[in-house]
Image (cartoon, rainbow, N blue to C red; front, side, top):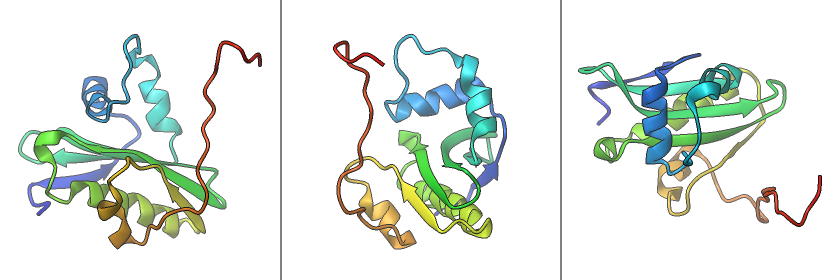
Amino acid sequence: MTEGYEIRFVKRWAPDELVELYKAGNWWLEGYTTDGLDTLTEGSFAFVVAVEKATGKAVGMGRAISDGTSDAWLQDIVVLKEHRGRGLGREITRHLLEHCLSKGLVWIGLVAEPGSKRIYEPLGFEDLPGEPMVFRRRPDVRG
């Protein structure tokens, strides 16, 4: 299914292609700039892109955030709509997971979109008890 594609670990990638991927995940907000993308990729524990061999273009991505010692979070896993259904999301995740395990990490979490369990469960991911929390700055909170 993933024939014609390869998964590459990278430290940098073309900013316009990363923006397209972040937009595909609905994670790119109006007003964002590409200024921090190199820092984002270089600062990740691991950053992968799924590359279409025929064009050399990134059609998917994902990254692992970790201290490199005990645990990691996999996030920003996305595939362009026209390339979905080929197993690329699962392959991106598998590469990141294997990288983390090869470094001795023992706890690996995953930030995923609702309704995407079918992609990740075959790789061994399961629901985390409780609910993850997120900080959102509110105008009425000082800090």
